[in-house]
Length: 67
Image (cartoon, rainbow, N blue to C red; front, top):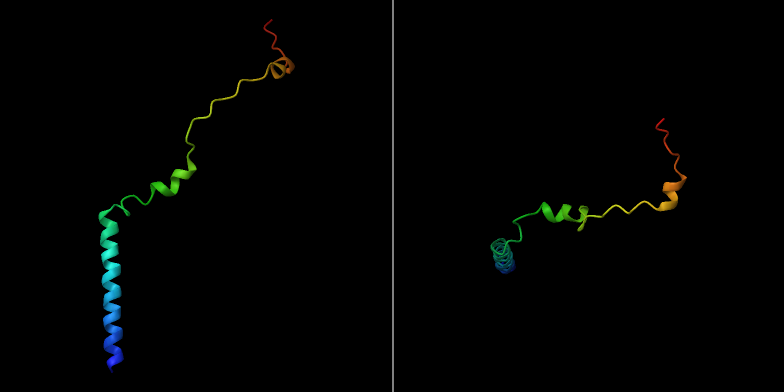
């Protein structure tokens, strides 16, 4: 019967430790924004400028007749 008291005491101590860690993490802002970090990797950091079209590609295109 004394084993139950020991296990009950240990489980209460572990529960108090985890509850204290949870309160500490909430106060430090660990759970403020859970959505933005998951989608941040989908956006590029900088805008990519369009590369200028090479001159050889411009010369090979058919010219339009304006007549």
